[in-house]
Length: 197
Image (tube, rainbow, N blue to C red; front, side):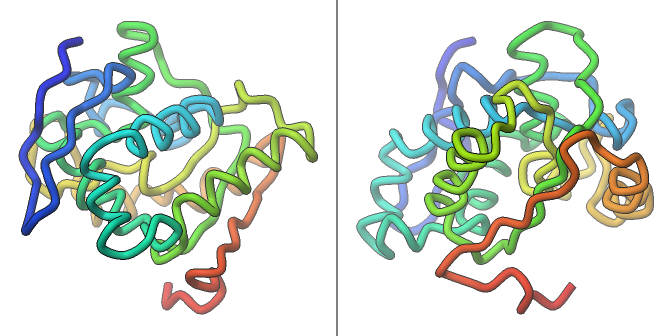
């Protein structure tokens, strides 16, 4: 996959370049069961590490501090620009990039987080989860910023946030009793239990 700048830069933040680990097309969120809206821990770590190497990340870090880059920033500057028009989440596009036309694996770990939480602290927490709690890097996870289609653009095969929530992915995943359960990602930026939903 060729690296090309994508739309979405605002103010003095340069547009991000889609990394090779993210395909530009896929099956579409509407065509995959929510229990399979997954990416592996390794893919999660790779995606964030790739984003952190971009001029976009560096510009955000210079404005707000690297540890103050939040999941809102990830959505606005990376996730939406990389997925806009595809109908696919980052998770589905990463599965497509890794193995064309492969069915994503069923979620084995639910990651709960606050959108206003620090991306780098979450990254460090996932590294700790692997190193100290022995969660394999190959574990398929659900992480809503990356697992749900975010652009709200009506793309073919895509679903709006409301349509995705109507499929009840959070409850269905929890009811499926994922092999590794649920981890809650706490950061210093924002306390996950203070969120309004």
